[in-house]
Image (tube, rainbow over all chains, first blue to last red):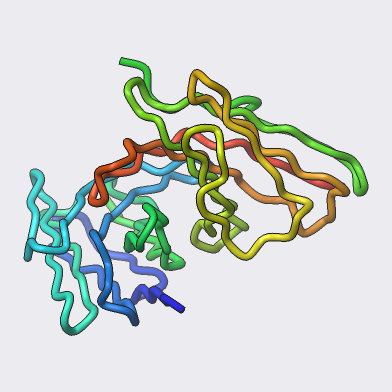
Length: 111
Length: 114
């Protein structure tokens, strides 16, 4: 059974810092990995999707990497801003288009 | 281009009642998946519908059932509600036949069971 773990569970940083969120998964037989952002009480916004054949994806200040063999992914956020404060969720896609999620990292960026 | 929409936004029910949640997929998508997100946890996969049939199911009891209509919209039904069914219910849409496709999520329906 696939298990996804995110570390740390919560993170508080001053504005302007670069930060790294970690995600690990137990079964490397995945089709892709997605990072999502969730604001309190809201739905999920897709940030980055890394196909199983890729090593990384970048969008603006965000960069995500994937190492399938070791079952790890990282989300790097450059020059953090207060508007980045949210919960960040990592999810792996298994056979049949089913996503398995981690519990998330709650990020607070202080101004 | 309309994204994934869900209704209602919020719902309050009492134990033992039944509830129906609705989802319209993103334009061009034909597959709908439902997820349950309890407070402080990541979403859990309930089931997925494609071509009006349940294609995959997660570890949820038969009290949870669904339906997909010819226009690809979908309903999630929960019978005999329990306090533990209180959660944010998320709908996601995607395009079948493309294994590495991105899933797009709706804003969710917040269900409170009293």
